[in-house]
Amino acid sequence: RVRLVESGGGSVQAGGSLRLSCAVSEDDASNYSFGWFREIPRRQREALAAIGTEGSTIYADSVKGRFTISQDDGEKTLYLQMNSLKPEDSGVYYCAAVQARTWKTAVQALGALGRFGAWGGGTRVTVSS
Image (cartoon, rainbow, N blue to C red; front, top):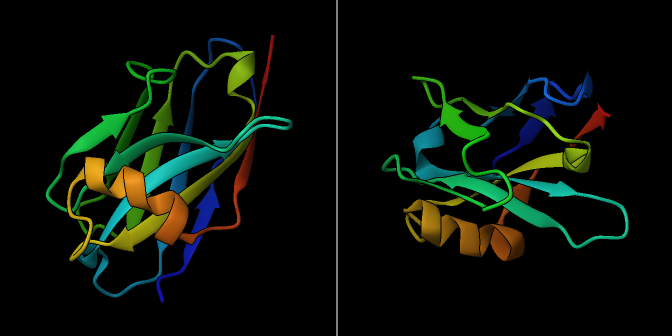
């Protein structure tokens, strides 16, 4: 089973940027589609972005135009570049993975990650006003 480890969280002022990383243990990471989620206290877990194994991406309206999901060339690391951060972006951020043979595109992955995905332990982001 694939293992995921997030890093890159921290504290930043509103308007600033952070880049989250997610290290993928799987030898052949191309077997998976990936996504990023966040949890904010007293709110439902929110799906932020996903990337399909064929390169398609999809974003939640709340982060579209500010966040970018990507993978390195070897596909062993997933990234979430977060720009123009707002205090309401504060929370714990998680990466997740699902088998690409079943969920190949970003749209398919986003719908499956919450129910069937493997998850990392999360990294905390705090945005101050």
